[in-house]
Length: 335
Image (cartoon, rainbow, N blue to C red; front, top):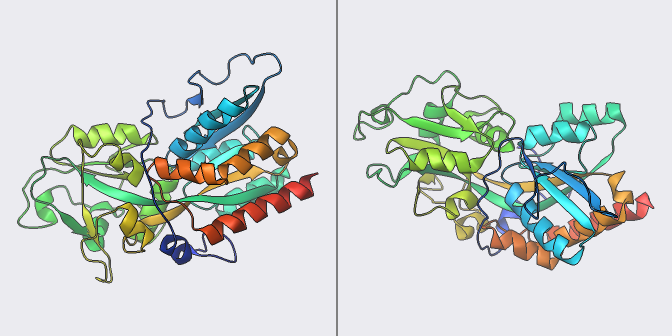
């Protein structure tokens, strides 16, 4: 397993020390739409003297960055923060092209993306900002499944899977076709889910409905009795009246039918579907005072409160202090 936040802390330390959480904003933006925190479409004319911070990427991190943008703009009327949700891979593509200042990511940057940035001469800073659990959900009318094993998820989602009905996963379940919903291939959620369930990132069956906007997936599962899908826990937490979450039994059998929650994720009990979340910022953008101020807010206590408000888990104080120092050092070097 990769190290998720650099040389000094790994996933176990992050999950063991996460703390409390709260609720996520629903969003209706299209896959590629960039929306200003204030609700207007990005790309419009700037107000006189206005500066813009452009963010795009993970749909999982989107509610956090959107919340940060809304609160930050309240204190900085002359700064406009636009936040898009083109998926982690889509965000990195825009980051490499120099189109955005900050890339939201639900997985670490991969080697090809690092090489592409190096070729463009773009240096970047990686910051861990929150912890998330992936939820496997079904329709509330599903009265047969309460738990699935990692092996069953692999049987269902692995590349070349021929599983079509619930009965094929468990003889006691109905002989009805499973309607599958999940992340698209540009998504960090897709990469993480496929790596821990199928053994290799991006290895997946292709016969399912995919989208980078998790609200579309929520709607799909909530409208079909025999559906199953996966996405970030925060989107389930905002839609508990429309969805039913399944418990997961880990491959080693140590975690038996554990459902995702703030408590199970922070205690490291919800395995293997828990992961850290990141933002990446161009070091060239760090020279801009408005970007520096926004990032400091992102890593502040107020920022971590917003993480919790959106039903994500805070990073532990030790990791937060490391991220703040990492940012301070980078800002000092950028002067």
